[in-house]
Image 1: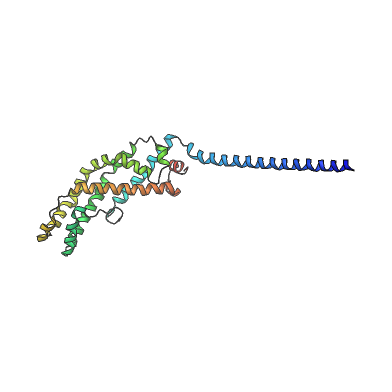
Image 2: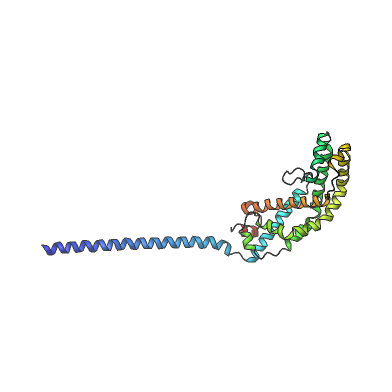
Length: 253
């Protein structure tokens, strides 16, 4: 009788051990499988960009900047492209703020408005004339850290573009702006505005402002701002990725 009880007990213990071992095995297998699944997902995620060649990355970034620059120039170079866009509208130079406030106090706001309008019209004409300069600057870019830019913020390429080209772009654009300020009547409008101060002219002083430099810098600032907006759109919106290369590079992020 005792032998039978011991036999039954031994059998139960064996079954329990096998059951625990089996369950542990299943748990181990499931955990291993889960780890494999996680590893696979990680590899797929990392592989989406690792499949891109350096040529793809640089080509995609340049194409995005070319597209963004063309869009910016087209919009800014349209009639009232600067004037009607509050983001890039060129205001009265800060040095002339007293001149503007005095004119408005005297009821001669139209002279201040006319001066601001001529500056903005000069900028829109200059930006169109300078389009080949921007295009060449993008085409000649050498991007060693292309992947870093690709993985950077929404305007990483634009900021890199600005850092490496702004000085040269401004210098090359300055003579073009000078031609446009002359043809748009900026200088004459400025003189008319100052002369309209009359007796108040002595109160605010005849400010010596380099208008050509001022308009050039504001025009270039406006360009980079618009380019940055387009870069962000290309990065985030599949609809804006209009070529196979743009889809390949920015769709992989």
